[in-house]
Image 1 (cartoon, rainbow, N blue to C red):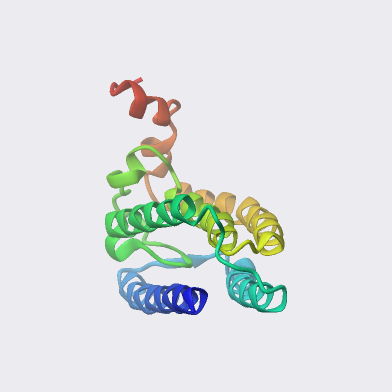
Image 2 (cartoon, rainbow, N blue to C red):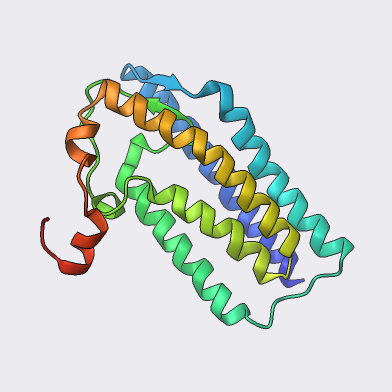
Length: 188
């Protein structure tokens, strides 16, 4: 019962995000936004869809139950969701599941983007570990963490190249020590 409620919530969240992404895509394209990475986008959609299916099947077939570490893992999940909201809110209408760049748009450098170039990719990577581990779905955690790593090795360079070519991305983010600034509270 807990798993059913949890997975329903996750699916609802993902569908809601797709609706927001679709609305943002229309807005960005009206602003002259250009889409990049169409060749690999289907792979991202497939990975995320199969992640949910794999999780459901592993929990049902192998009769996985809620982990004894659920208070810790549940807390981590809540933190990732708060970080997700922070990242998405920081990008506003520029957030999308696709790589869409509005030429000469001002680069977002607030919220978690002050410290990380791609906080949402980190959040998704953590979710691919935390969510399955909540229900002892170890195979799903391993397989989809590896598949996610593979697609990020393609997606992040594609996104960075598009941003560098059409915005002042490199001026804003081509700095070292961004995470150190968080810890030392000073500009390096």
